[in-house]
Length: 180
Image (cartoon, rainbow, N blue to C red; front, side, top):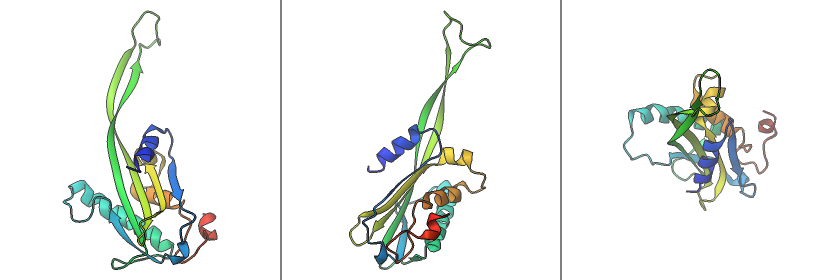
């Protein structure tokens, strides 16, 4: 539910935009490792599309966490990294007038079509108290139009992680990540 406002803002937005939140009071110096989970859980059956997307998405997230010197730990991690792709269908209305434009007294013609919207949500929580450390989201449809990279998911994850400026065991943002 806490992501609902983020999803609504992204679906209403017109440009590629990463929305993010960082809890600057989190004890970043205490975070060395993480566990990666999908919000649906790992024991639920998946579709063929999810079987293709999940490994690519997880590899991109793991690469970004590794770039920040965090190590994966499934036994007793400091952080929980969760992800989810939220999809929905929206109706778009287009006006189709004649070739001369709108003529007074003539009714405009409206065309309606359905479009699928997808938002990628990432969050990092402290495993000790389940408090939010960082959260980010991006509209995948708009992002896919703007990126030139083949793997849209990897590009979206990288863009989102550009807002997470902390490395393992460091209290303050990393200067190397600030200057990227």
